[in-house]
Length: 251
Image (cartoon, rainbow, N blue to C red; front, side, top):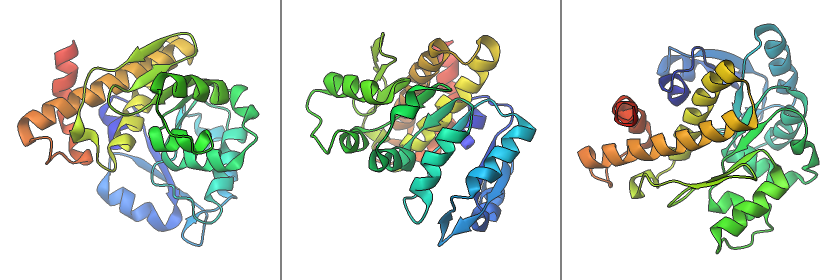
């Protein structure tokens, strides 16, 4: 959520289990919060109706689902139901990817609103029956055939494709190999796509361009952070502190 705001999104709402709302409000007061029904410590399936009603009233442009979600309780069913029901573009990351990999029947993903999928090698392998990722381009091609939309394969030289174009990122290094770094990337992409979509429409072009720009900026933040802090000492939460300098550098 912080990354989406730092990327320039005008308004961000964090939808979380009701038990977590106060934690989010304290740690990120610039974001709005939406409390969701929870069950056994995780988001409940009926939270889909809560989000749908909220979206019908507020009309947000794009959603990000996955970071911090877990696979406890009804969370996997929640992911499948949300992506089938909510009719806005989505960035699908982290445990939302893991939920999809367990669920089967992914044909619905190729219809409806556009989506950006952001797996790392381990998450990609779960979609491909735990096959080891040896040829990264071939793996990404298989993922795109399965999921559609715009797909990433994170890692050294992150790959991005929309089925027609393929890009390989040149920024970033081992400082990004810490838990939470991918969540920051997903937030950056979501914030960038929210703006590009408002300007030029939520199209395959703006999805691909926002994903590519987000990956590049994320890696550049890592490069700048490592230069100041060393690659060992960079924390995921520190990456967005370097976003202003990264933006100035590419401008």
